[in-house]
Amino acid sequence: MEHRKQRIAVFGAGGHGKVVVDAIQCNPALDLACVLDDKPQTGATILGRPVAGGREALLARRGEIDGVIVAIGDNRARLEVARWIASQGMLLLSVAHPAAVVAPSATIGAGALVMPGAIVNAEARIGANAIINSGAVVEHDCEIEEAVHVAPGAVLCGGARIGAGALIGAGAVVLPGVRVGAWLLLKAGTVAARDMEKSG
Image (tube, rainbow, N blue to C red; front, side, top):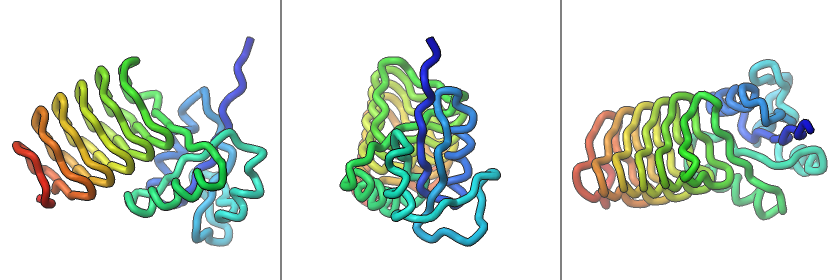
């Protein structure tokens, strides 16, 4: 028996929205229902799909979708929109690109995105509305809280812990068991060898 695809709306029509739409279109279990944005531009499209409007348009289409993913790169803005969507009684759905590797024992939170080439290893826990970007590695037993962005090529070694809203820059490395605090920035290409309470 053929299973119906999950109908998912994408909220966010910028560059990050483009890669989220692509990930959905590459996933045979998902159907892109619509693309929306807080500042929709007349005639705007994302990979050939029209931007259907903003929050009111999403509310009007709620009966046509199974859930939403927020496709906004800025961590605070993404979290704000995600919380508004949840407050409206709509589900936040996670998306993993088919070219990502996600261990069966890993946990992926609602609204999270795992991009192509990313690896999420055994018993890693990815929080709600997090982004694990292209080619990033999240090793075994890592804990990533909500609204984190692990940028392309970053590596989180085993047992690393990343606080809510933190940004792990492109190519950065967090060594085993190290914690990066909430809403901190680990700059691109740097190595966190000890717990961080200030951006670096």
